Image 1: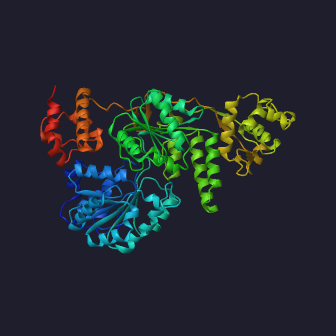
Image 2 (image 1 turned 180 degrees about the horizontal axis):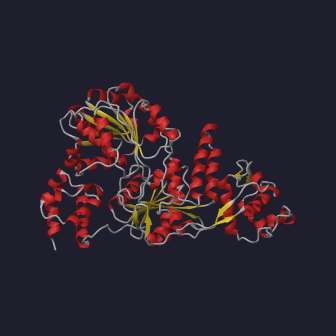
Image 3 (image 1 turned 90 degrees about the vertical axis):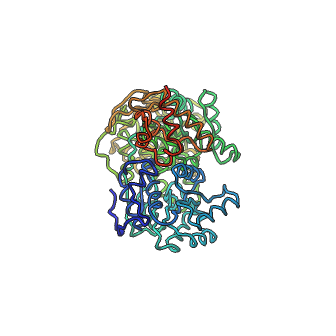
Length: 621
């Protein structure tokens, strides 16, 4: 829940009130959640930490105070793509905004600096590494700074999922500008990460505004990995044909392979990773942002600064490092609030690979310990037989009162459970009898009685455990094995590549003192394209069509017009008008400028720029 403001509540220095600016600039009639409290607090000169989910309206929490206070708001932003889109959107709304980053020529950067000192800017986006340079700090002392907003503040924490060393130096802001309000914002931070954000950015006495982490429009689904690419194709064809989506892979080679496989299957897919030529990478990103129905296949470096609102699905073909990373990445779906999907294919090798990466890293023992704990929490989310949303929210300290969210795979299609005590004892006994030196495939060969060269070479066909697991097939044993690893009764041996060994807790399982309940293997796509009920109403798994009574021909005309304008202005289509605004026009069918002005998302400047053209399109039959 939001913490009450402790700052003195004074009127805005330029005489405008927040609600009127919200309406005139952004075309919105009211605040959501804690936005009004945050805006009031920062406008009055207070510092704070804001945790708000992607799509929850974080940007307004610093953009509005910057417009209400005297001077220019300085926004620390880690990605050029984020700066570009935010600046373009603000300019469309009539706000004097600019960015200072490495994409500018020296002449362009000098012009931005001149405008800052002259007081011609309302908002300036700056990369963290540039802001802490002596030149930039000197520049800011010559300007009238309204506030500092540190976006993606989790980057300051070594415990966060996206630590960036340059963020640590941002403590200089509090030291050099103690009287300028600071607002740190993030969509993802557990208790440990929050603590470090507060300490490093000197926000110890500042209130924390924590919104719900729940994204009720996102359906969470995790399937057993068999042939991940084939499963992905099936998922897209059945549920998201023609939709924009993001597919995350762990390696660059995997990105290339998956993008090619999707393209060959008739799904418009493009690769994105740091190894691509810079021009090609930018071209692919621009196509994803500006065209409809493009699937981008990327490493996790992609997307933190992407504001594209109509991403209908995010898919993972490899396990992320933590629940924070999973939440941040899946949060790029459904920023417009429409039904969207977070889908992941997951298997035993994912756990083994992530554990090996942690063990082989040069990090401190404490960092490794925390990393293993975070990985275990994510594996627990993947293996749970209960509501995934409830488990996800609990990780961030939030309680979901309902037992079922009605919008995750486990709630829509509950998995079957079986008593797995005997199966677990057979598998753990096999690990022990073979010397705790072998990987999954060999263990399964022994269990099902397969006489491979390796089995006979080591004499494992003579063991009492040989063939004791014939009641299950290979795939089923893989599922059992993975779940025992997830439960902590087995672990990978960092000294023997691929080998599995017993843990301390496995002793109680072997003695029959621990109950084991196992999820049965699930099919590749558990949820079919059918409607289901969530605790907040009906949610469809795919959401290409707008909600409510709309005229599809008018919507098509408006979208085509928007695409033309976006190409002319060199900006993404959603910067011109969001899909929600187009749907609002279609539903309202305005015939006058006053009626058009009442559509959410139509501010004064957009009415001035596009009002007559939009009315003409509405009148066209």
